[in-house]
Amino acid sequence: MTHNRSANLTAPGAVAPRLAHPRGLYTLFFTEMWERFSFYGMRALLVLFMVDSVRRDGMGLTDEVATAIYGLYTAGVYLACLPGGWAADRLFGAQRAVWYGGISIAAGHFALAVPRVEFFFLGLILVVVGTGLLKPNISAIVGQLYPEGGARRDAGFTVFYMGINLGAAIGPLICSSLGEKINWHYGFAAAGVGMLLGLVQFRLTAHYLGDAGKYPEKTTTQRRDRLLFATGLGAIALVTVLGLTGLIRLNPMAMARGTTSVILVLAALYFAGLFLFAGLNAIEKRRLAVIAVLFVASAMFWSGFEQAGSSLNLFAERFTDRTIGGFETPAGWFQVFNPVFIIALAPVVAMVWVALARRQRNPSLPAKFALGLILLGGGFLVMVLASRLALDGDRVWPTWLITTYLLHSLGELCLSPVGLSSVTKLSPPRLVGQMMGLWFLATSLGNLIAGLIAGEVSGAAEAQMPARFLQIVLTTCGTGLLLLIFTRPIKKLMAGVE
Figure 1 (cartoon, rainbow, N blue to C red):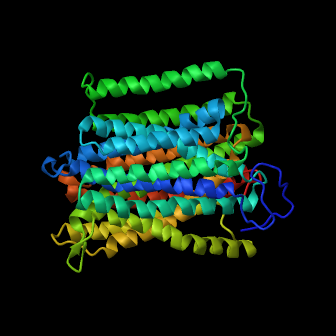
Figure 2: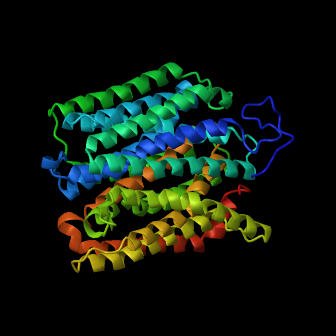
Figure 3: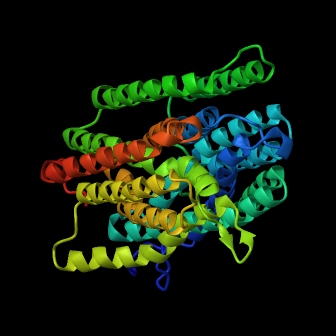
């Protein structure tokens, strides 16, 4: 972390001489911490609740349907980031987007706490809409706190990322303990309480953000934009009512497959539109091409990584020995290992990058993405072996899953923090909010594919686990090797951005 003693202290997000970071960073740190507490706490329960029997207050769904719903939900969370970023850029600013988003998320979790099917799906939709408003815009505000960019902004995103993982570590412990051991709906309610705490903290300390993310850029089309935004919300409300009343019947598995194609087409059209009609200069177009390459790599990464909440969570419940001293730990507790590894290893990885930079050997952005994908593949190679042992009839040691999460966490540290930071640096300044939304669209695509894959390695398809996991190994490691081969051309397209 660096000090900028010559910063203009009257500027938004300025740094006092003795502070490494703006005070506003800690407002965002704790807001995101509680939001991730609610998100990952609920995620640890979601698939397990859906496949549990109705007799035990679950939904009694098959693995294929439950993981398809899970994929649609998690994909929707990140898909909503694109209109969420657009709304902040065009209508009401990032700060208000974070506030409105948090309210919707809290309402969604409390709806999930109501033991009725209608409220379950309503809760998922509210969380999706709220996260779409909050997630891209809180990251965009972090970038705006560091107008000078550079290594100091990277360090700020690293601190922010620690808040994400602190919440992600605490959430499953509390929500899984309540949900799996007492009642599923208590776990969902606990997630709602966490988001409420985040909202209170944000409201009390938002003045530290200054004007960062406060006002959108004025446009001549704001009336049209408001109408478009209201129409979008109305369409969501209409489909929700029709679905909850049974007037339209939806097939989750068919929807998941269809949405995959829609997202691919949407991403291609959006990139094409920016290249052709956004008025970008040559350097901005070259940098946008880099974002497009990283978009594909990111989607590939998350399609494997997000098995954590579905197939790996089911593996923990059904095939892993979870007994410690006569106490069977909740399956959701395994979700804690990833954020704990992130918190423990992030400083180590950062020191490695700094040490390599001093020797002029710091890996480039595409090389770090390649390493992340290869580490992800290594984690699934461990699962190939573990699943073969599990299919022989015995529960396997928890060390198999822990090792997988360790390798996945190292891969995440290579890819995700630098991905967030790189988008803010590679994007044209007037399009940062939308580009953050587009970046999360890659995560949306990865989550959707993850849900579809999970349905092919559980339930009636359990015998296919080793083969499916091996397929993930080959695709992720192959993509990583391709990135390594084309590192130099990609770096040239970045036009000086590090």
